[in-house]
Amino acid sequence: MSSTGHEQHAMRRALELAATPGVPLHPNPRVGCVLLAPDGTVVAEGHHRGAGTPHAEADALARAGGAARGSTAVVTLEPCDHTGRTGPCSRALVEAGVRRVVLAQRDPNPLAAGGVATLRAAGVEVETGLLEAEARELNRVWSFAVERGRPFVTWKLATTIDGRSAAADGTSRWVSGTASRRDTHRLRALADTMLVGTGTVAVDDPLLTVRDAEDRPLPRQPLRVVMGERDLDPRRRVLQPVEGVLDAPTLHLRTRDPREALAALAARERRHVFLEGGPTLAAAFLAAGLVDEVVAYVAPFFLGAGHAAVADLGIRTISDAWRPQVTDVTVLEPVVAGEQPDVRF
Ligand code: AOF
Ligand code: ZN
Image 1 (cartoon, helix red, strand yellow):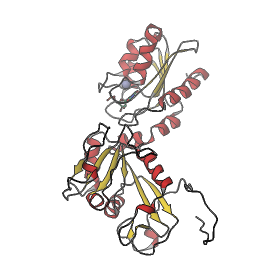
Image 2 (tube, protein in one colour; image 1 turned 180 degrees about the vertical axis):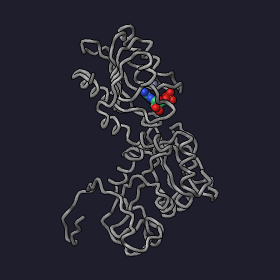
Image 3 (tube, protein in one colour; image 1 turned 45 degrees about the vertical axis):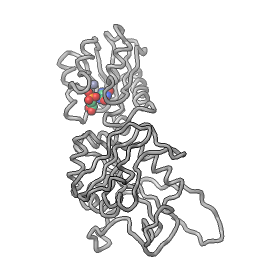
Image 4 (cartoon, helix red, strand yellow; image 1 turned 120 degrees about the vertical axis):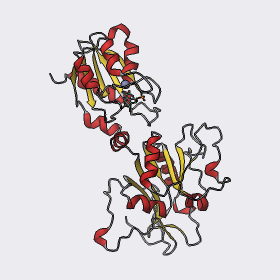
């Protein structure tokens, strides 16, 4: 039997619940669940609120109480089959007397997958793949990270039109304007890890926090990670605690190898690295094929000299260029007509 109209409607609602604002993005996926009575009416709704809290199914079952018996659970992810921070949802659904389960995305996490088999073995009818593409998109980065066993890497750079990230004297603050700085903080907040190299810490002394428009740190901060063999000066700002924010201390990974660094971060359940490193670190990740997304801020200036955003990648001919696919171009600062020559991007 394929899904009913009620179930399709419920899955759209479950996707909405999963995307409830304020739910932490990582290390767990966003998941929503709707329990339907046999006549298609809603018995209860639930969603996951972050690692360590009940899963979406358990949340909905708790709200439904005895009314869950005989219901259909419509859930955006395959019910888990493992005891992690909480118990297996497959067993909880069976014990609550749920008769049928309709799910969107199979669980790509090998530690938790297997719910479908357990449910079917217990006589529960299971339908998979309803609105699967939407569910996958909702947890795009999480799915990537658990499938590959390493975090997704977003590389952010800010350059002039001629590809300079700083002037010859090292000054760089003006390269990214107010709008791009704000946009950077918006994107940092989506990641669970900020990564730079020891060189950037020595030269730029960044804070690597997520801040609001008034420059105040937000309550939830990504883990700050510095990679490289060099010792760090304990006075650097990245090593100082963030006032008013409880957070893990900055992690210093004494490795040069991006693959090793990502493995160490995967072991800490990190799903999304925001790479703001200097040219050496960027080149190392690019050369290793470990950049999954690029966010490039291009400031409408020319320098003609100065520092490059990325070090030598060994590319000597145009056909060997690294060519990521362009998916979005946005003008962040208003375009003002003036006396200067026009630039068209
Ligand atoms: C969630 N929320 O609603 C569902 C999940 O460590 P645990 O016990 O929180 O388990 C996390 C895993 O459980 C997660 O990676 C995913 O594979 C599976 N299902 N997780 O966080 C949920 N249904
Ligand atoms: Zn679960």
